[in-house]
Image 1 (tube, rainbow, N blue to C red):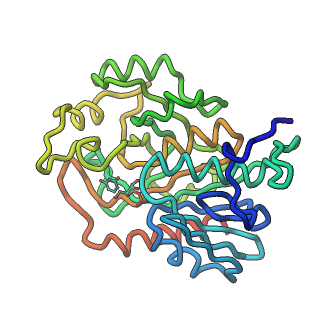
Image 2: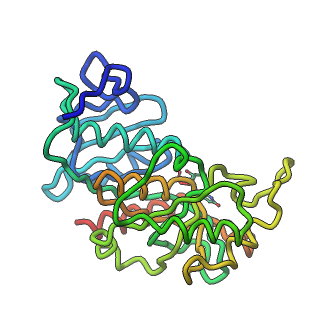
Image 3: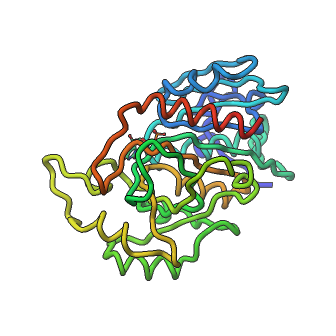
Length: 287
Ligand code: R1P
Ligand code: URA
């Protein structure tokens, strides 16, 4: 079995993972993932009990119990680069022996549910609606470093063709949600293809003072279908979550509160209320 050196897999003196500061026996099989650290207590307030609270950098983790099952909620902060840290460390916590630093022979599959926010890029998907990401396409550069695999990955050749259609200069990667988890969230009306952007402003077609080098980006991605599917929404983590989950054998689904409509230029008048409503709906659906 593979051995991971002390600089490949950094373990803190208390036996916890380097960034998340979580110890192996604290990890739960089911974990809610949010971006905003302040969203963590907004989720864990519904747990029957919170046993463990950890805070390091933007990574806040609460572990406890809901309806008799162990459950956790962890914040990732913003972006696919943080997802890379969160999923590598959570996977190592369950699939590597932290005493011997050896990969375990029998692998464990975790269940992840992202409760996040997003902007719609279709008029038909209004502000204050909820959307399940059926699949997501990543515009970041993680696929330059990871050979993502697994049955949930989208076809690389089809993505290359689509990238040419929308004149996007770097290779894309994409992956699907766990089909097992899709069945749990049938109460959420909109399902769609999510674009995961490597930034909030120009990479999502926004102009403040710095102009985008791709002025037609939003127009192109919202009108050019990928394998018959129009992109529905933009956020900043889902494709990375789906690609890591597919590659490492975990179940993952991303739920989005649509706060903006980038085509009609509307923004939610009650973003916090919408996020709280999505948290309640998500927890009801997994109960
Ligand atoms: C940008 O404001 C952030 O909001 C979205 C994006 O993915 C990005 O992380 O998700 P969260 O609300 O979950 O952070
Ligand atoms: N989060 C994003 O990443 N984009 C939006 O437009 C809204 C929320």
